Amino acid sequence: KPISAEQLRSRGWHSDWPHDLTAYGPNEEQPWKHCGAVAQPFPDLCMALSTVWYLGPEDVTPFNGGTWVVPGSHKDPRNPRGPEDGIDSSAPIPGELQVSAPAGSVFMQDTRVWHSGARNQSQYERTAVVCRYGPWWLSGNEFGNLHSGGHTLRTYVPPEVYANFPPQLQLLYRHLVAGQMDVLQPGNQEAAARAQSLGRAERSGDNSQLVVGGMSVEEWKRRRAEGSA
Image (cartoon, rainbow, N blue to C red):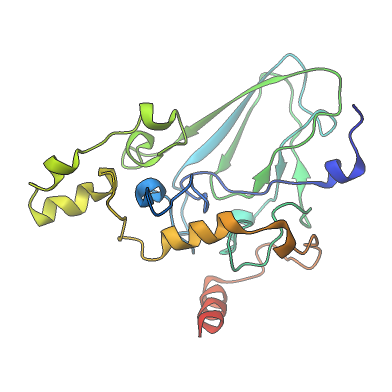
């Protein structure tokens, strides 16, 4: 089936866990699902790396679906899934480019980098494997709920065991207990829910005025404060 111009123009901009603002579905019944996701503005350091292992057999090109990336976006306090950032996550972004690489290459990026999958316009399939690397304290087993293998990998602390912990210990294990709110990041769950609920009607379809890297953290905080006043 031919790929339309509209499909080729479509993007799915996001950053990877732990910097994914939608982070797998917090809701009233399961508010803990957002635990481990970093709130905006992201700290100015590399907390994890996403890698894409291009196994082939075809080389990676823009024509066969090379990953879309926005260079320098890891330094921007905004995010395509930021509910108040005014970025259309489905529209092209100035400065975007597609990865090209020989089969057998590995593409590495800071998990804060805005990126998107792309359409494979060729008649050939190619295989890629995504692996994420982070420090020991950013354990996907404990924090990456529903992302890498879902509940089969996640560590749990039974509520009845948690109830017997002293308060100081509960602070360290609250994110692993079903039904406990991750209050270490106030408003993070609510922001994730708003990001998930953004409808197509709320998107402009145009990011042409967006200057990636053109906003400081201070400016981002000021605009957020003015918007909530």
